[in-house]
Length: 328
Image (tube, rainbow, N blue to C red; front, side, top):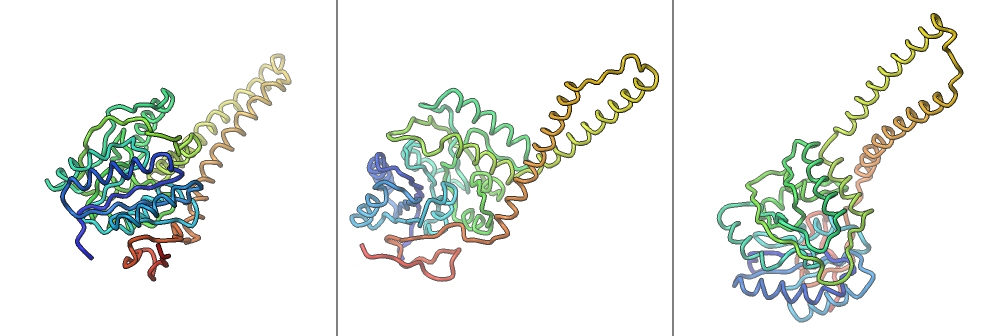
């Protein structure tokens, strides 16, 4: 196989409205580099015509590759599959909605050639997003940084260039609740930022609604910090101390000031509900960690591939045998 300088990894889910423009801009940028490249589209179980459009690209351009999932496995898993099958000396991860500018890739490659192993995009602004999303994203990254000992850069997404040795290191990390940008910080290597203005979506609707954003945030916190578990211990100790003090006050009141002692059913119920709520909250946190242990223990593959295009000779590193391919 001819040596490939750069693999561009593009996860796609129901992006038929934008995929042609994504393909046009990416190929224009990569053709301008003057080096051999490949663009790997990962069809993450799309229910629209995204897969059919990618197949047409593959027919007309052998530099376009396709990984077609058997179902939707999620954005972070799609990125992982792209890295597993990429053949480039370096790899660029970019979303297909064109919020991250493909035109920045040549600058990333230049910085990589200067000796950096990871060049991550840092957002100076976020156009086309609500105030709520901007403020919560800003708060989340800073909370995450405070909870973990891993230096995860703030105001960054998955848009970045990585060296092949970083990809090889990531292949040794098999966890299923993946937070890829955090894993890339965890493995280390020489990293630097490149700033850019993040545009609004070219077309279509976001594939990361609030529910998915919350799950990703939870993955980030629980994959890199056990402080929520310690928080349960701290709150339990504090509440136990308060309860003990309150018990002493009640006993003293009953023994020495019986005339002030009243039934207090309302306050009793309120205190009981408060303490029960705290207990359930702590059990929920513990349950999240136990659930993740259960997911890891099952040992299922991260993803199942239905079809590969234009990469018939490659063997996925997470599989013992070559994936089946279907004719064009």
